Length: 190
Image 1 (cartoon, rainbow, N blue to C red):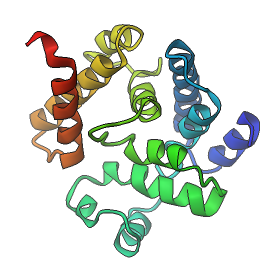
Image 2: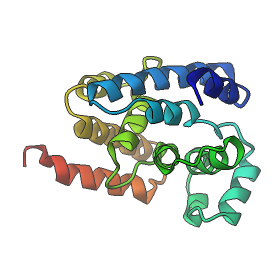
Image 3: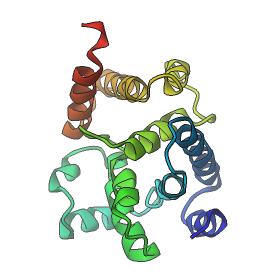
Image 4: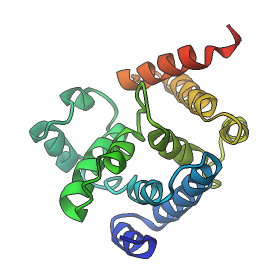
């Protein structure tokens, strides 16, 4: 499936602003893939489909979580997290993409997890730093993205966790596991 075909499929599932975000995420992910000498084809597909389920009805996503093998504890956290795991499931069923690496990158883009592979990190990071994003801390992450992929993902997790704490929201355990794993891995000068 090429870029044009993929974008045509995704476009019908997204609002215009989210579709434009998707294009920027795909371009950012490709830039990161080239920079880190990764194959771009699968990364581009994962980026294009990362928000496939973003606007699915919440009751529908809840049903998918309840009746599939997805972790049921997702339902205890903000519904904004659901579109990653449910999206991976729906991309496989509705679009026919069966490549596990692509589906896993889509799945984990909302929470991250410990031991993310390079493709998962790139999709997670590209979603956070694409050029349309404008919030405190994003420039620091953009600068780090081309210097140290692990540190950039760590900063993304740190910023996200701090944001959730500030807004008195729950933090999904996999995000904390990702943060702790990367903190140990990069050691932060300790």
